[in-house]
Amino acid sequence: MSPLFEIKQIDVEYRLKDARFLALRDLDLEGYLGQTLGVVGESGCGKSTLAKTLMCIQSPTHGRLFFDGKELTGLTQKELRTALRSMQMIFQDPDASLNPRMTVEGHLKEAIQTSKVPYIGTLEEYIYRLLDMVQLPHSVAKLYPYQLSGGQKQRVSIARALSVKPKLLICDEPLSSLDVSVVAQIILLLKKIQEEQGISLLFITHDLATLRYLAHRLVVLYLGRVMELAPAADLFSEPLHPYTQALMASIPVPDPEADTEQAKLCIVGDPPSIVDPPSGCVFHTRCPHATEACRHIVPRLKEVKPGHHVACHLYNK
Image 1 (cartoon, rainbow, N blue to C red):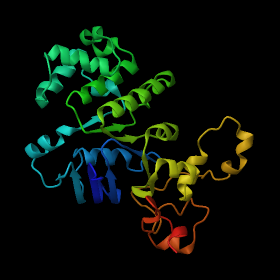
Image 2 (image 1 turned 180 degrees about the vertical axis):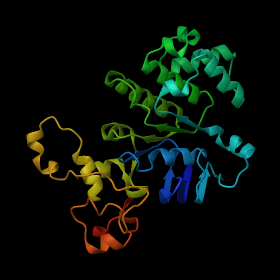
Image 3 (image 1 turned 120 degrees about the vertical axis):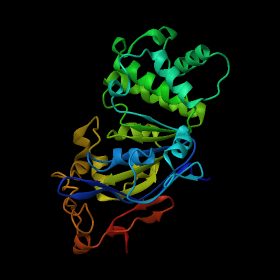
Image 4 (image 1 turned 60 degrees about the vertical axis):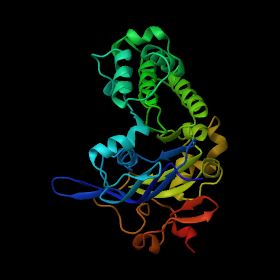
């Protein structure tokens, strides 16, 4: 199966007043049509930078991007607009991504007319079909964002993204601003849409339970580097990297007393500064298994099982 998108040896550098730092380092990823690639890691690990880079909002310092068989790096702005029509993004905060002066109908019309996407029937009928797709009543079309609940606003954002018939939806923590009661509804909705439309998802979140249900493959980031990349089922059943093991151990369980061994895996302390990352393996300052090699040599991402890659000296023997 050919990948829908490819990220090849990408570096993304940010510049501060007195410093430069790499938010992503030597990143290699692939995503496939009809599948969900989950991205997980602590705050500041580069998850949102990955989304912005794939959307070409942020330019890579080094490396190449491919989408739907076309290389994106080096294209002009006009060429990019055409190439990116099949890629849409759902943001964390729907309030920040919706115009308070436009109705729901206005948001959808603007997206449809700007992209010039073909549709069957009248524009109004197409808008109603989109509302049906995200399980919103037609009466919502005439309402403004302030008249909607948080879950309804996020559904409008999803409908707007779907209006241009994308092949890839990039979801940058789309559930973090929603009430717990609404989160499950949005997860089920995204799963249903993916099954019906055959689209791909790049799903960024802190919530591993969500990825257990949604993701086909998972990538674990730490300080801009890939720690582990594997099919979701394999990563949940047998995480190999010490950092991934600690993340899995942080998932709440109904009976904490039955999970005392997992509790020992929890890491302590905060991540180092990304402006001045540690030498060698960037995780060695918090890793219970760190050796002298970890302090000086960057581990390469190695396939240790079919489809299961890990960047750790424990497996580079």
